Image (cartoon, rainbow, N blue to C red; front, top):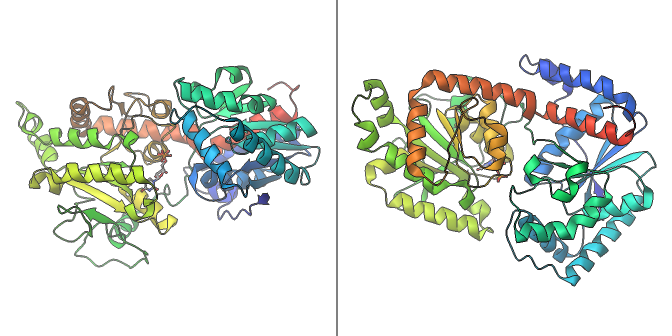
Length: 494
Ligand code: UDP
């Protein structure tokens, strides 16, 4: 079952080239493309994954495909499928095992199922392929199919694995034992960090970091009035001034002391745009380190910080005013995820245990998911009005929230989880906490970061530059061109 996906990208490369802070990145991409395109002449690239919607891969592929096409590399996006729901149970299991979770025992039946679905999809895909095509296989679902096509047709095949763990455990070993024969059949593999490359692929792999689209609704610049308009229309802020209405399908809501989520009103307004704000936006996942962050904020507000000897009046006032925003998806939208429900329930309980004055200073926010565009604008607006953007993950594959915050020249406080380490250099692009589960250390760093305005500006500037150079979609397409040219013409010097 193979389906090709139509691409409908609103902005062309030329549109991006007209934007002053993107012109340089586009120019560099075009320059690199001009050098590499002769090696790709006559080639067509197939990006193959297992879903057209949902998840980071489906989010980024349209942009990458559109840019490759515009640069002159014919590129198609195909989605594999199966009528066997058990196949996706198995591939979800493999996904979790690669992240170190789940039962490592993979049965004979599971091997047979994977082989059967891979063969069926390879058969369907074969009819669409030509001799000069290049395959890029995204993640384990289509890997078996890609390996079979490689074996049968001999066309260049690259395995792009978007997941990984910087540890070797019985679970990760089991997953890679299962996938190894297929991954080894491919000519090359791409991972998001060097730590994720399994040993047996170390001499046939490269790293391409995930990337963001700088003009997406989540990352585009917003003028002050647009920002205020989004905050008000999204229900994140109450203003006495009228604003031009935007039709937001649903408003954000804030956790109330009774444990329900309620619309924000004048009494429960957070003070966005006026107060110092510390923000974390993530899924309701235990590994995102919500609880230690909340505990750290409680400490930051205690007399130990606010009444310490020698504190400057201005900073004391800042600590009195600062508020914490913990934002994640509307619980109704993740009703089918029992773990998310449990993590949110625990956070709600911790919130309800806070003294009333602190409850006012902590805003647990539910972001509606009905419209992707509106959700993205809310995330954008919240990140833009944050003094410090935190990503306190205990584990993180990459952490696009970090990239998003860096691009907005935010001051980022991250953990040392593998993905975050790839992005933030401690003391250069932001700060990294040694131990994400230590609220004292987190509180200390928050205090230092809030106090040091010049350093925040410096980190933000450096962070934005780093994203510009390495983590924008243009850099990603540049890397793809290198990898594809190398596959198309392995004998040419790189
Ligand atoms: N996100 C969002 N709305 C939410 C929570 C998260 O749009 O309510 C986005 C966030 O902006 C980021 C993505 O979800 O783009 C999360 O990606 P990340 O790599 O940070 O973590 P993951 O969820 O993949 O573990």
